[in-house]
Length: 437
Image (cartoon, rainbow, N blue to C red; front, side):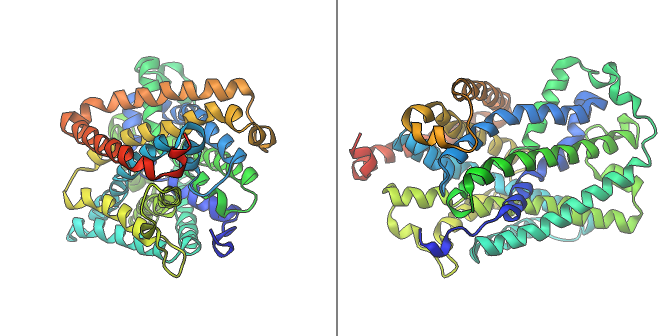
């Protein structure tokens, strides 16, 4: 990579991308569902969700600090688990980006609440195209676009919290065990695991490892700080969501229900547009910002034809970006539901998300110098234990999605994986790293 495209991203660029990636469909859609599971325990469920997310995130942060590089997660898998495994990881990552559609569809559904006369398929496709073009103009342009949206988003959500606090009269219920665990600990845990989906995203900062200043420090710092800030924000949102109206009026509902109470009509519409809808756009834009890094590195390794890595004058690998755009817009064109796209995308994400986490298991053995010199270094026992705990966490997430996705969805994914494995078999002789094995 040329010096022209290196060291572009600073702390605030990375924070805006990370925050935009995390704050999205999760808090907008899942808060009401979690309230139906655990009642006034919803704020505490966000804290527990942080603990669930923390271990896999720490694994990626440790890798990013030790061996920062562009296409971070792909390179971790390649160097620590093997080149063939890295391409399988990358192929699953590409398919998992149908999650892009969930943000665009969610944006369209909230648009419908304000402008019901619009064609929602066109709205979803239009916002997808907007983010696609923003990233075609280069990562720095996309990061500026992201920064503006994140500032609007966080301002709106903070305004919602402070406006709602004046309507919350009883805070003692958040310390009452019977009200925190109305369905027992199992219900609380189920809510927290669901809310885990509202906290994932910061780990993809490692994709920019070779394009930032001081990555060994910035990667763990941005990942940890953005998660902490988001959880504090979410706790405030959950308190307002559960404290303004009786529980039976908000269970399973989204933030718009309480927003109608705490805001005037004009402010309510501004909140929907400036908070909820912007949150979906930031998540969509953040994925576009990092998604091509692994494919670019795979091309350099010989897994894909070099022509596919062609860049435009802004340094963007536009063919790869277009591939992700096609993957993301396909569910919209097929008219798939928001819930199906979200659950399928998250299940596939849990599968490919295991690969870089497991790579940490081999870090100290295969790259001892990088492990010893990392600014953020885990104890040796943690590099072995944390990946195994992550397998349990991700495994449960995949299991819980099995029936909802159904036989057709899993069969299509299995067929896709089979095709990828055949491609790996025939392409491997032309990949230098595989010839050395």
